[in-house]
Image (cartoon, rainbow, N blue to C red; front, side, top):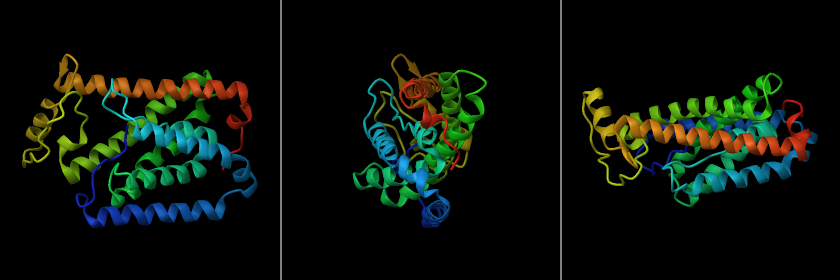
Length: 239
């Protein structure tokens, strides 16, 4: 849900360069500190998780105008370190196929990588207090809300509020509308959101809620399945 689809040339250079520098620095630290034995055991599942993320972020859901990322699922299964590397690989691949510019891949990695990190630690804090499904569900909702807030704030700052919002059945919205009155700009952008019989704030609420529930439910169900066939993936030590 938090993947940024902005093409090259929109985000100012100081932002996307900073995004790449921070991403590369994190990757460098991960590679230096990663446990080789732990990584060797999880590489196959890291590739599988990356493939699932790639499909989720590139295939539209049709009934909801958002894409799933399943980044929290990746974090839970392979840990925050390998999960962050998987997110970077997925974002570079998506950028090469036109799902967002190459210059946005670093920022996208940081935004979606936050889901991996937050989801991993929240799930591990909750899994012994509530059911695995409930822990994965709550961890996903909270992590996606954080990354979604980051995405909306960044896109609104660089490309305008309208470009930051899902637009449901309304494919023709005015992304060029800008005004010094931010409340007026937000109101104009939200008015362009439609979803089935809903419009405006009601449509926006329905889209975000449906997306969160679907992503969290999918993550919870997959985690519950892995708890039966590969419980070791959910009990491994922190990277």
